Structures are given as structure tokens and as C-alpha cells.
Image (cartoon, rainbow, N blue to C red):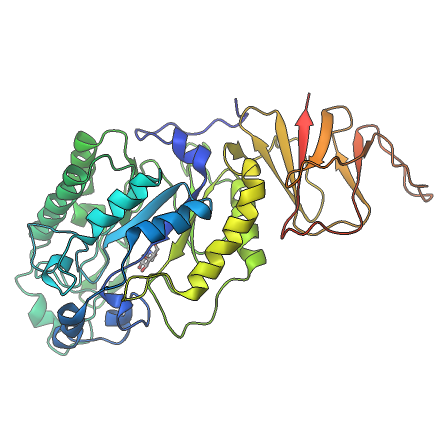
Length: 434
Ligand code: FHN
């Protein structure tokens, strides 16, 4: 098994570390303004102004089966979808609020269709649930609340009882974990206890009553994976919108942890019509490779339109993954960080199968003619391109005339690389080890 000892936690993370790659779906009323999921806060939209989206939300082209097909074809093995984001609008038929999709022109439980469709495609199911709620009457106004600049914000805040809101969250999360079958991941978001602004205070585990919440969650779905954003570390560390350069460790014990990077295709989690910072195909593939090369998972975000389909840009990004994963998923699924004793050459990233028998060399920068692999001279039985199983010739000694300064070292393996790069975004060489 893997040479990496990972911190053991309550949730079942074994399938998760095997599957490596998931879809993160951000869908709610904010798809209508189409200016980022924080639009209500950023533009300080009033309840009346924002309520027009509630009155008009009608995703007439929503087809969860189509989403699920695209996710599976992209090589995604699990999915997390927003059941409620900070706006407080529920995409499921909750008995604890009227602010839900069944009371809009959509007229149905959108989470139910999501769960059924993605489960039918064989993906593990996750729910995102926001700890923040800009609609709930007992959620105290603070510095990240749309009402924070209202002249009477302090007066509005009087009487708000966060203990009632914490109970509301427990009630809703109980619904989500009871009414939709086995749920594999609960992705709660987020805690900001240290922040202050005048009389306003951030919120953390004591406000959410996180210990009671987590105990309830585990009593209903014991194997579920819970992330670390309730303010109490659980099964999953969640670096967001950046590329870690080392495998994250527990900040007290120093143990390697189960971790997942979450990233957007563009600069917005929710559908943003005019946002232009869409990642290139190379960035998308490199994110996945680099994340797995450090023992992590990648959760890539799509923001469906208000009509309920994935737009052309999201489809193009998913096709980039589909085209690459079709031939190279063996270097992702069931793989992790390579033996730390093996140093990948510049411009390459290693992943290694959990059983240690297969080492994958990802040619992010395509090398010229030769590739020297330190430490592997006597460990590799066979080498081939993963996309077509075509042989890659190996030498224990460089068969080019070394210049004066080039002394072949004892443990160097030299691969002969074709001058013409295969027609694939990032070619991968599979090394079968003894
Ligand atoms: O505020 C949210 C944001 O909208 C998004 O949901 C991300 C991704 O998980 N989490 C918070 C920012 O960290």
C-alpha cells in the first residue's frame, strides 16, 4: 500500500482518495443576476430588489441527467452541489422555510433531481450547505452581510438570536441527510471567528454550535465525509483557489491529511455571464496533475445558468478534462504522491499507484529527445506512453555522447522521447516498476 501515512478520521475517505476528481456545482437565485454568487452582498441589494429573482426563478432547461453525463464523461467520480448558499435560498424542499425552489416558478425539488441523476451515473453524492444565511431573520448582521452598510443595521440586528439560527441549520441538515439516501460528503462553508468591524463580529464554531451539529450529522450518516469549515477539523482539509506546493499536514500532529483543492473554471463560483478569467486547457489539466502529485483531490466548479444548463464555456472546460482523462485516468484514479525519494525532473510531475507498482511521469513541459530520471536505473521493468501503450525506450546510460561535464550517474534511467509530441495536452509515461 501507499508509503504515505495519512491521519485517520471518522468519515470513510478511502473511496475519496481513490477517485480524486469531483464536480462542484454552484446553482441558486444568483444565476439570474449572473454577476457572482456574492452579488447580493457586493451590490448591497435590498430584500425587495433580490426578491424579484425568487419570483422569476424558472430553470426551464434544467436536466440533471445531462449534467451528470457531462461530469462522468469528464472523469469526475463525485459531485458536490449547493443546497443553500449564503443567500439563504434552498434548492431543496425544506419544511423549515418558504424560501425554497418549490415556491418559485421552478415548482419542484431541484436537489432531488440532482441526487437521482448523479447517483444513476454512479457518482458519489455531496451536499454543500452554507453556514451563512443572508435571508434568515435570526442570522445576525455582520461585516459580510448585505445589510451591513444600512444606516439602521444595528437596529435591524436587535432581537436576532443565532441560537435559533443554529437550530434551523440542524433541522435543515437533518432533512438533507435523511430524505435523499446515502450522502457521501457534507461540504459546510465557512467560519470567520476572528473578524470584527465596529459592533459586528465574525462567526465560528461556537455560533454554529458545531460540536452538536457534527454529532447529529454523524448520528445520521456515520461514514459521511465532513470538511473543516465548521471551525472543527474533521475528515477533509479544503485549500481554495490556490495550488498547494506540499501535502498539507495537521497543524498540531504534523500528520498528512486528506485534502481537496476547490477551484473555479473562471473567477466566479456562481454563473457570471461577463467574467473573462477562464482557465486555459493547460491550466485545467495541470491543476489536476499537480494536486494528485501531492496526494490531493480536485473539486472543479461549474455554475449553471438560470435556465438550468451548463454554458458553452463550462462545456468546453469539461471537454478538456474528458479528452485527457479518456486516455490518462490511470495516472489519477488510485494514485497519489510518488515515493518522496524519487525526484521528478524539471517540467514533470510524478504520481504513483497506491500499490507502488506504477509510476507516472506527466510531461507538463515536453522534453527534447531525452529524459533523465534519477534513482530509477534499476527499478523500471518497462516504459510506455499511457495514451496508446507505445513503448518508450530506456537506457541505463545516456546513449548520447556526454559532453565533458556530463558524467552518467549510477542510478540514472534515461528515456528516449520522440521529437514530435503526441497529440495530447499533457503526455504521460507509465513506468512499470519491479
Ligand atoms: O464565500 C464562499 C464562496 O462563495 C464559495 O462558496 C467558496 C468555495 O467553497 N467558499 C466561500 C469563500 O471561501
